[in-house]
Length: 311
Image 1: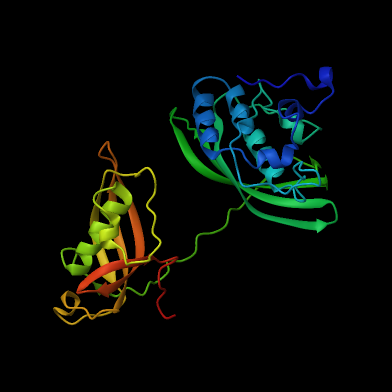
Image 2: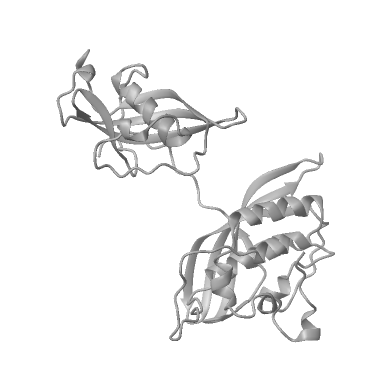
């Protein structure tokens, strides 16, 4: 178990003690999301110290900017530092400050009991610099909160964080301020107006592709256009896939889809149920482009986004 040493006794930033050979800001950007989730659940069951441990468990990330000589360069903006500050603020209890003074030297005196509020995940929503050396960062957190009935419910919380400083040396100027999270927009109309037949020729190609792509059932090459770059996830994340609904952008006359001319393309929206090894089902959607070759439909690509109506 990782514990921060007393700051006054050692005169050093506790995170610097844990990471003596790396700048803190770039290192924190490599914090694993999965480790944060595990640490959060352990905190509910065991000790709040495990929550702060989730802040310093590192995994390889993308290559950071480098100084001359090969040392990692400090970040020019404090988004990652602000994100860790919000995690610490949400984790702090009356018995354990969870390293809060590392980010906010003035300190605070939270009155929460252990395990009543645990951050599961965080992400930066926005960051602006209203003046030189000053930053305002909005962080969204997925938080497990203890309910009056003793159950824990997940909720989203957005907090605005004010930071001041320069590269490699930042300090919060106040405690985080809860603010409104971004609103969810209206449902978007998609341009897949035609109902397809799951048991038809297009549906059969889609079913075979998803089974091979997501569940490792059969050879993927059988369902993919020659030259298409469609490497499947490894290892296969599911054990089976069931096609629930198929819709197409193009309209076909009866029987036309069974006799396609070579080079004919069709854009489809697929709703499917991906089933794992325990029998649990996860709904998934795919937008695909299929191209006809030698009388059969082959998946040419996974589209980056659905086609929107009226565009």
